Image (cartoon, rainbow, N blue to C red; front, side, top):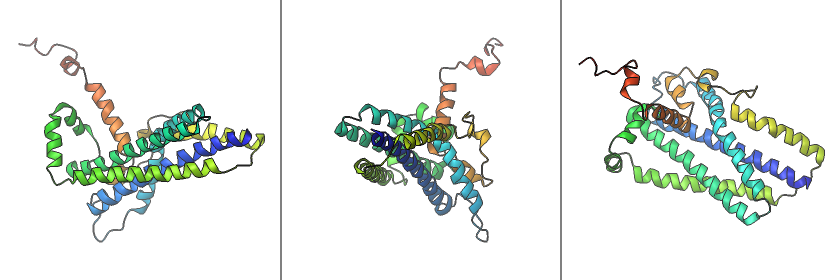
Length: 263
């Protein structure tokens, strides 16, 4: 029994770390493609690559990513425990779950990279045009443009499948391994995870959380500053802006009065 409990801990920890690495690699890929290849960094030829800012971007980005991965890890833990006796069902569900996460991360990163190419910015309020404008016309423009949408869709699926394959390989390796554990080790490991997962999720040592835009020290480089939060965080910010705008009357933005009373 002690070995099975320890295996749950190992699977949970490996899931969290694996997808934190995936998020970081996506951020690095975005910086390489949009920042270096497409010259979003705007570094003069005689200037040096801002390595310290780059390192700050990766480390600070982990704090943004942790908000997402921490929650996803709790879902993983729930699924693993719920179907612990149904190994085949558990394997299928976790395979689908890992693919869904991979697909969403890669899609958000690739679309954000394309968005930066068009607007020279990461996801922002302009994205709401896709909600209020003619979506059919937007998609037709995308597929008939020079943005290589079919190729990018292929790469999204290919990379998502590859990441799922790598994770499932790691998952199987842990499942097939016999751990030598005892109650003392399980208690220590359990206490570590009880603190570590909330720590990653809150991105603060005191576990109190807060708005990371005010907590995290962002890089000085303007491009790296935009790249730090990540595509999914930026999407969440746009979504919150949409929710604030949706259903609001014009009176709210006219000082609370009826703007037509003056006529």
